[in-house]
Amino acid sequence: MRMYDILIKKRNGGALSDAEIRFLVKGFTEGRIPDYQMASFLMAVWFRGMTKEETVSLTLAMAESGGKLDLSGIKGIKVDKHSTGGVGDKTTLIIGPILASLQVPVAKMSGRGLGHTGGTIDKLESIPGFCTSIATDVFIRNVNQIHFALAGQTADLAPADKKIYALRDVTGTVDSDALIASSIMSKKIASGADAIVLDVKCGTGGFMKTPAEAERLAELMVEIGRLAGRKTVAVISDMNEPLGRMVGNSLEVVEAVEILSGAGDGRLRELCIQLAAEMLLLSGRLGGEEEKDQRKQAVDMVTDAIVSRRALHKFAEFVEAQGGDPDYIRNPDRFEKASYVVPVPAVKSGRLTACDAEEVGMTSLILGAGRSRKDEAVDFSAGIELRKKLGDTVQEGETMAYLYTNRKDVIPEAISRFQKAYTIENREFEPEKVIKKIIS
Ligand code: URA
Image (cartoon, rainbow, N blue to C red; front, side, top):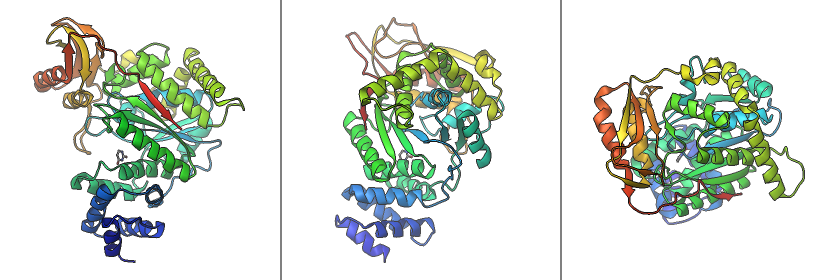
């Protein structure tokens, strides 16, 4: 087999066989196929697309390109959740404890934040002592004992995806449905998930900007999951403004505690309950009723886990099991505050009718909460507290948000960026529903 022939076949719109796709993924991962040939392949895929069968072959070849996490020591069906990335997305911090309190095993691999989107690992590391680089045997023991463990992605998890993604990033080939879907699903499959719930964000702060794009990607990933033998459900959720009221690492932990205490932002709570209910359904723990009744039962059980505070206690238990100080969960006032807490005044009176959520994420990044390069450190106390959300009215000069930072010099730019991220108009406006569609 020759890479040259594979390139010509794809360039001409042909469908590659499983053997051809495995040959190119293995060859590239092991350094036999050079970057220029892989770059040419990626561009051909960008123009020609891939069939569902080709996309499944690519997914499985990437999933098998490194060491797979052996989670066979964990009892029960392991359900994983993946978010395509957004601003203020702290759902894992809420859903993990809920499911663990219902005895559903959650063995989670998460990433760090990059660009305008935050990462769960950074959020959890804002809790003093919390450690995400735990040995596999400790990870498995914690899942079996307390039903929740979370670790950073190991270097050898789907290394083909890492290498291919780096090339896509510099060759204008990131935004291809087949390449995005196989990239995401390969990591989920390699990390040992039996069933997968995808949270596909749609809107100004998401990877997919329009409902049509989000739906197309969601349907493709659900189909890949099915063909790869993993039950997969996708929830398409709104990302036309940050999720919840807090953006930033320790600020988002505090908000997660608020939701688990039965309070907090309604849209964030609604999305977490739905995602957790979908995961509970896939875990196979509910009895043989009709699907509609099962979904209601799942929502009731998840809601009860919050109301009873069992999930909140589970969060503290999980934090302690990974070396963190659980007192920060019981008493979130203990988190260190940023030196500067700066109000952002509204530039005029009216109603908030649009938000460039990516810009809000970028504002949080320059305040110190995120990183623009992989090796940058983050400031755990930096971020944004939103006082107004889409659909709310404001008076000129009224505080729309508070910026938290330790960098005095960035404050004027951050205020200006934040103000420009919002559109204020004098008209009626209803924000979109937080859950747009569920695809199963
Ligand atoms: N997230 C991923 O992991 N891969 C992509 O290609 C896009 C988003």
